Image (cartoon, rainbow, N blue to C red; front, side, top):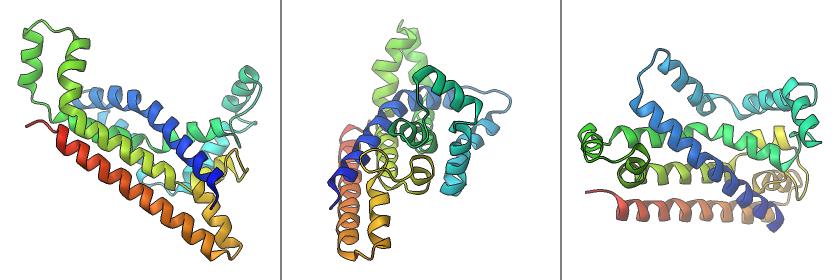
Length: 220
């Protein structure tokens, strides 16, 4: 069992949902209640990671963040190192890959909040910030929880984008999914099976907990 790779995967998943939580809430709420020209195009763009092959998405991320790209050169000039083949690069790639898993469930959750409820809150004198904290977030809680669980579990199993952007550096970018691939390539079926079983169990438990919490907190 490659515990170092598992720990790195869990850390990557934690950082991913930490960034996606505010992004998903703001973007999901905005898309749920705002009508503007080109909204369908924005939603389609955000959903692209769902249909693009991971290697294709990983390739474009690798090119856009590489040392020869303007973005990569700017990042290296500011921080002294690039993003490619680093843990920080994996976090950026993971956040972008998981955007639809975070935003879409939250958008649907905010869309399900009746307009009358928000209007009642406004008539009661609640500020937009208090309305978000006291009314919208509690009502949208199941969708937000679903988004975070989907993003976390998807991060644990992501392979193509991780390998393209991060490579296979032990302790830095070698996640448990890449470690399983390595063990299969080395014909170490027992180690691969153990890591795959642990990943399966961890994903199942995480999703199960989300269902339990979601059912308890769902508004009647």
